[in-house]
Image (tube, rainbow, N blue to C red):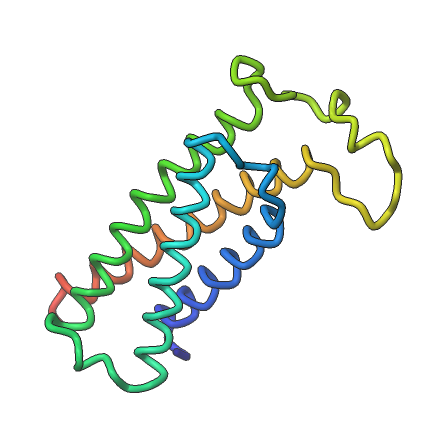
Length: 154
């Protein structure tokens, strides 16, 4: 896990945990299928990446039916595709008035309370958007590195 690829996996898992912190209240995505899809994407990619870390730490990578670098490449490709959909859907359904949400922070009534320990709903939604973009970049880096492992013979 001390390699570049291992550090990327740890980063992806940590950033997913940040996303879960910001979406800890179901009212952010409840009864909105596109946002529930995004939460499913976050959960699925988190579980698969955590499983990959556990396989590596437990020295069980040879238990897979395919070569581990090929598994990493497939996982990275799947994660990039899923996170790309989440990066489009989350802001579209969180910040577009057409879907019944407030596009500006000033309209969010939870932001009017100036409790220093309270993060208003609009800020949480924006944080999830930004952290999703960061994790997508991490997964793209993971994809490039994994493709290099599989296709470039040294």
